[in-house]
Length: 171
Image 1 (cartoon, rainbow, N blue to C red):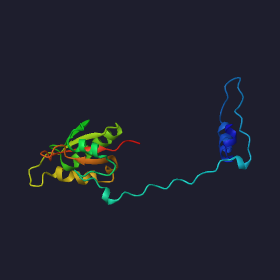
Image 2: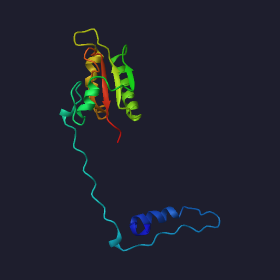
Image 3: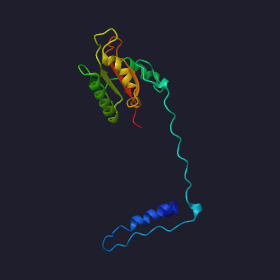
Image 4: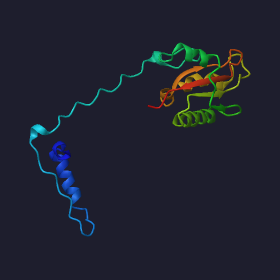
């Protein structure tokens, strides 16, 4: 019986709510469940402890196998054999517009439960690459984006202007 599991607070809230209910024609007003003994009331558990904070060692590093990814999946992902479901090309954008496009793209892909996406920054003209290529690893480790990303790798060693991301599963 459900009434055996209700607390006094539950009964009081139900009674307050039931006062505002107008019964259908020919029906009676809902009854307030009868009180039970205090020993029959369930005991509440303490809330679970929050998860420990992320360590700095869990930062996304492009090309480094993260914990939680098995060897076979990592090999398929790292070698480009895991196909990207969507691609975002950041060519020709300013750093600010590229970051906002990246954030919207990753949130949308994660919301659509995609597993692998590709970000194209381009190689850039400088020795270390362009601005977008240098900034991408920093952006991926920001507090807003880091929880969405499990791993990052270049799909081909000869193409440093493209990065594939393995997104975390939605739980």
